Length: 440
Image (cartoon, rainbow, N blue to C red):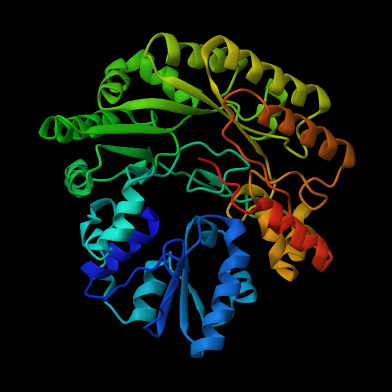
């Protein structure tokens, strides 16, 4: 279910805009408006949207396009126009959105206070059943106080050009609205004969704000009590630091979340050794904290720990640190039944610290000239000369990433990267290999 797209759509519906949703995973696109919006789930979707825009132009003529998704917020106006053309606008910007669509900005309710039910009601039963039959994202909160280098999400950020730091705090949705939305989804699921919802919480760090988390847990429990024969399963991402702080200061937030159906937590371990964590601004991690959080998750709370291992940091990792990351992941898989989720770090992604860094200007320019190569920024894509220019690190990162993908329970299906300069035959072979290789 494209939750972020539905959130924007619900805000526009509330503002009086007529919105129709299309998902080409379900049926072919039918454009019936002069305004067309796209939701980009990440940098790899940039070339796909460019191709889709061109297809629409050829079939129906020029349109006014809006693009949204976190990756769009990382693009300057100049880069946005170079990639998508001058008729494309940043749909994440409320002032731009209202200007293009001719609506009053005051009519746009904040995302935190927006119910998605108006958008859900625009989906046909066929699409809705498809979405509810699979795991999908539940919008609970957005934003993170940490400032990890490789992350492109809304977080605390220090501009490398100006040195100015922008502090960010986690922002929760109104729990009464979450409850109403969840009750609606449970009701629709039951009408389709489904007995379970599998939800991935949108939080970047689930345990970062335990007081708000507790309110969310209670809201979910109320929905469960109203639907006693229906199961709600939750999982999400967390830092080991926030988990341990919540365990120390407000353990009830964890306990009640588990009671609400939370069964799996993906810890951002993201490398191994103090030197690596310091280099990528993840100094809140320590080896002791990581191991204790993983142990406690399983033994104290009965949850499944996932090891979200974003590693292969091009300028921070070494053969030794990569080997250590693999060995510790292998150990906790055996000791605690942890689920390995390996990913390859990319130094520059629209929105992360490296994207605006002078040292990556040439690489960024190469991407703008060859948009197909944005696919190589996928965290499941193997290292390439573009993302990992040092051959020794590229080879070592590839070796240990593939070894981690072979560990029991691994959920990551790696893909081959598309790099500038590939021949048509090479490009076709890579696309054929990558077809259908998605995470669960």
